[in-house]
Amino acid sequence: MIDYFKGIYGINLLFRVHGSALYKGSLVGLLSVLIFLAISLQWNNHGRERDLEDDLEHPYGVGVLVSGVTFLIIFRANYGYQRYWEACGALQNFMSKWMDATMSVSVFHLQNKHYDGARPPSFFDHDELNKLNLTRARKRRGEKNNASERRLKSVVDCEKNIYDCEKKRVTESFGRASEAFNVNSIQGNTNGRRPTPPSPHRKNTPNGVTDGYWGIIPPTPDKASSAILQRTTLNSKYFPSSQCPNENFACRPNNKTPPLFLQELAHLSSLACAVALSTLRNDIEGSESVLDIYIPGSPWPVSDPDKLPKHIRREFQHRFHICSIIRHWLGNDRLPHHRSKYNAARPLLILGGVSDSEIQFLQKARGPHAKAQLALGWLTEFLIREHLQGSLGEVHAAVLSSLMRSLSDGMLFYNQARQIMYIPFPFPHAQLSAFFTVLMVVAVPFLMDQYTNVLWIGSLISFLTVTCLVGLHEVARELENPFRNVPNEIPLCTLQAVYNEALVTMFSGYNPDSFWDPDMYQGALEAMALGKVYQKNDVEESAIEQILEMPTLTESTVQLATKESSPEKRKRVSFAAEVETNSDVTKELREVLAKQALEIEELVQLLDKEESNQDSSGIDSLSSSFSEQIDEKKST
Figure 1 (tube, rainbow, N blue to C red):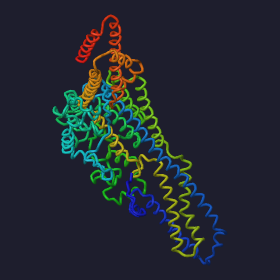
Figure 2: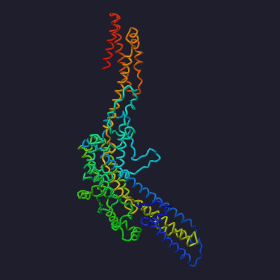
Figure 3: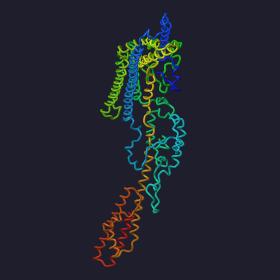
Figure 4: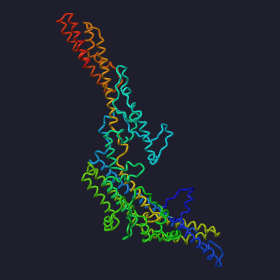
């Protein structure tokens, strides 16, 4: 594929010769100019005066012919354009389907029991933390408060400064940890009756608890709990590349590699895609399709063959560039042996390479469809075998069937692309277009000879008209088969490299921000609960103090207490303490006050019963007994 830059008015495109339909059509346009000159200088000068009506009664007859041929060529160019984009869509669809199925399998694999200790903590297991009103919003490193001053940075820029930024963030975050949770701010002021006890939460609680941002917990013993430290340690063991910020996910620090299941899954998926693409660009029976190993992180393969290194171009192009252009104009570069040289010089790369046994089995499969089906069968068999052994965790069979359907849909789109590759444009239409295109090389100069008497005008119009018609015909021929018409083919090598890099991301493991430490926020939750207990005790003591401040019980006092113990008054007492708190604390206070009101009512009834049998002195003794019970209740 020729990758071009859209310069001013597209003038820069005029200087590309190799793969150009313009220059290929201009050769035929020059031939039409010679024919026009021959007609004008030789045929019209054999003793006859220049007279348009002597040669052609009316020139519009040739114009009708030119119009009909134009429609014929444009019709073929239109269908060639449709075949090109249909091939591109089918190619992207089958690669997308296989990639989706592969990535889903890798995600299911991370949920099996072997990763129980390495998985991030679950929100389901810590639902009580929702009471802290935390959020999972992320803040960019170095982000300023003013939104107009924000500048998005690339991932590479963030990775270069990850150590300094993380150190600064941790220092600022944990330096204000003592102010992260103040129970007074949560429960309201206690009016000075009793100071709120110190918060029992950890001193290294992140500041993100208050500002709504949760950052990744540094996996160090002084910053994280033992549970989260164990999780991050196991995660770095299974996915070592996640600890290397400046490397790709396929790096091997200290010779540590990702799980073998993911390595085999990536290899089989890459192999299936490479075999499918190789059968699309190579339809020569008995010709070999070269496969090689892909190194993650290597430069992208160039899409334009003319931009390849010189030593690679030597394998399929002539040493002189002009000779390669002439070969392309004559169509010699489309011959089978030239195409085989080009395919060998640009192999399709596979993660993990390809073994001799795999090559032997692929060679035994006869036909492009058989080879692609064999490679896909290896991938499908691997998924089923590992699923039955538990490698995909507790995945339901219905979910697995959707993965199989994705693989099947990918093969369907592959066959659509194969259809465009295998079935050419219909021969009758192609033959008719070729015949009338050649006819226009002679008809247009004859028509121009009837229209104009000026040689340079006739020559120019003949050249432009024939170049346009032949150029459109060449565009149609180039677009009819977008898999093998070099250099205007689809860049299969580049697409395979993109597919491989997407597979490498499976080695990353879990989201790095998922390793939050629930123990750090558990301390804040305990502080909130403890604040509720102390506030409840303050309210109880306030109610008891009001009772103790009552004068010595007399008959009128007892009657007043009896009135206060009525249901209407008890309802008022239960709402006496107006404390700004949440609904749970209010409910607890109501229950405590209602219970105390019932106890007071029982004591009043006891006084009424004893009043009939005792004199006034007995009332004083009973009052002292009541005071003792109140003191006992207070101590309780």
